Image (cartoon, rainbow, N blue to C red; front, side, top):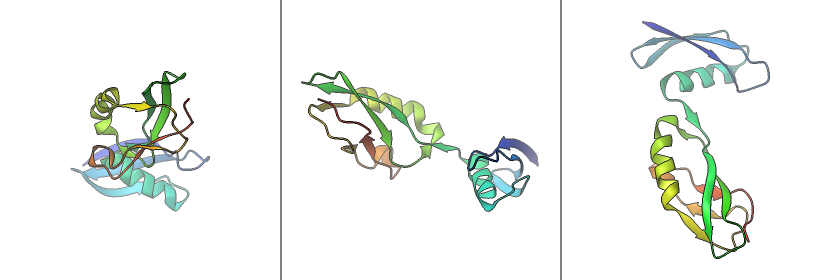
Length: 119
């Protein structure tokens, strides 16, 4: 069995969590002061997920890039592949905030959407 130490980011309390793993199976979680801490620890210990935030090129407009993000967390292990895909993308100006640039980004179920308009 292995132990992982984590600091929970689900709420402002920042609980220090201890996760006991047997292979990739979570055996126990301790140190959490709320149920969100246990849920966070179980997910983070086995497959960390994050919202990807980056920039996509804009063509034919005043702005050269537009900020984008995934609309839900994706596996952290996919970030290198995600950034390679983002480098291939571009959008044509104008672009409205909330425009879906790519649905089901990398087959994760998350959409890549703009977070501001681009002209």
